[in-house]
Structures are given as C-alpha cells and as structure tokens.
Amino acid sequence: TQLLEQSPQFLSIQEGENLTVYCNSSSVFSSLQWYRQEPGEGPVLLVTVVTGGEVKKLKRLTFQFGDARKDSSLHITAAQPGDTGLYLCAGAKGGKLIFGQGTELSVKP
Amino acid sequence: GAVVSQHPSRVICKSGTSVKIECRSLDFQATTMFWYRQFPKKSLMLMATSNEGSKATYEQGVEKDKFLINHASLTLSTLTVTSAHPEDSSFYICSASKNTGNADTQYFGPGTRLTVL
Image (cartoon, rainbow over all chains, first blue to last red; front, top):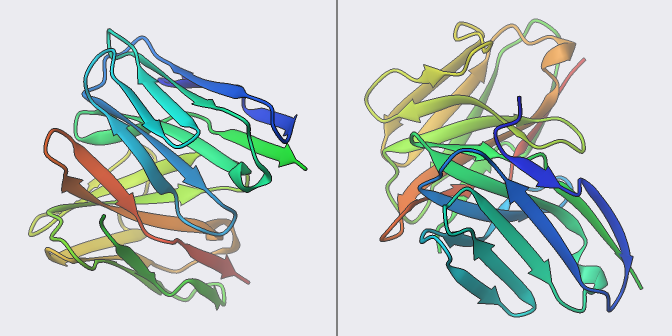
C-alpha cells in the first residue's frame, strides 16, 4: 500500500503549457518536501511546506500544502524544456520521509 | 543551503567483493543521515536510518549484515555493500537531515552508481 499517492506518474506536454502534480495521503505529515531529480543525480530540494494551507512560490512553481497536512500540489506555469525531470514529493513522518512514486515530466519545445 | 557529497560517484566491481560508499555533509552537522536505493525510473526506497554514535535502523527487508552502515562523526556516514552480487547493482543515494527552523529537511547527495559484474 502506497502511503503517499503521487499523480500523474508520467506527463508529456508542450512548452508554454501549465501543469499540476498531486500528492495525496490519508496520513498527516509534519512537513512535506518537493524535490526535482535529473538522471544520474541526487534529488534537489525545491521547497519544504510545514503549515496547513501554506502556499509557496518559486518563480513559475507554486506549491500548496493541504489544510489538513495530508496532501500537496505543485503547479508549474508556462512550462519550459528546462523543467523536464523527475519530481518527487515526500512527507515527513516519524523522523523519516515517505516518498510518492514520482512524476516524470517531459516538456517538449 | 546545505551540501552533501558522496564518494565514489560510480563504481564497478566483481561479484563477491565489498564496496564502501561515503556520505558527507560539507557545511553542516547531521546527527541523522539516511541511505536510499533507487531503481531506474522509480522513486527512492529507504534502506536505513543512520544515527551518529549508535546503530543504524534498517527498514524491513533490508539485510543489515549485507549493508553495513557506520556513522562515526556528525559529518560522515558510510555504507558498505558486503559480498556484492549483480542484483545489488543500483543507484545508492544518501541524505543528511538539517533542522531548517520549523522542519527537519533532508538534503541529498549526488548518488553512487554501483555496477556489480
């Protein structure tokens, strides 16, 4: 049973389109982290959200933590080829990170 | 930010040999580090939690005698894959935990690609 469901797992879009990635769980997390990973490299932290209802923006990326701290979303506006990569959400629980399945994003020029 | 390094980045070894991978937090101290394994196109699978000065805590299904973890200082944890076999070939990634004010955030190393022939 996957504790943190991430969707979609694959996404192929054209440059300039918008997209949203979702992470949902029935568990409450003390915080939730989003990472981006490129092939052959380690995940790079994008943001940590802690407070229920929190919204954080990082240029064209908007992150939201659900009011109950059980779910989160990542919205990318006007996607660019440089956004291509594996996006991972991870919920903090019991001193460990619970990872979603990942979203493989491909942005075509 | 916080920088975590791993060494080596890539290793190829013969079946039956042991391989040691180092994970260092370069600009902060980490009482807790984590070791993950990642298969192609898949998410990260936690193998064990490494605590400075104490024994590591292994996840269910991970053989502690095969994957030896040592966390001798606040900036260094090592993972030794003993008697490696081809099925141990994988991408191994470590992370170090840093308190960022209101949360413990994990910062990841660049990973180590292990290939066992």
